[in-house]
Image 1: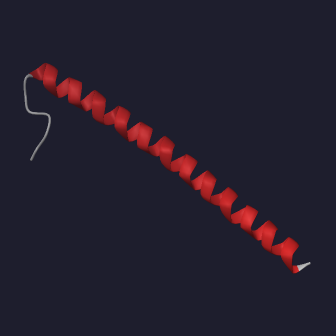
Image 2: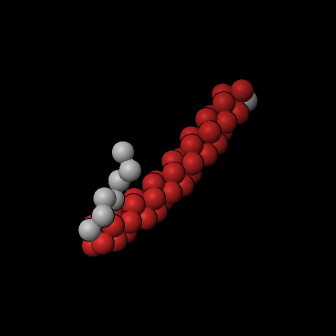
Length: 52
């Protein structure tokens, strides 16, 4: 019984981790798209696109 609970708990943790990683990938893609739009808009204006 304990082994079954351990396997179920492990599956739940890994499933939750997979979901969190999936969400983080989508957030990273959205941020990348926004950055690329800003990069091309700034370069079209002739200004610097970064503020370093």
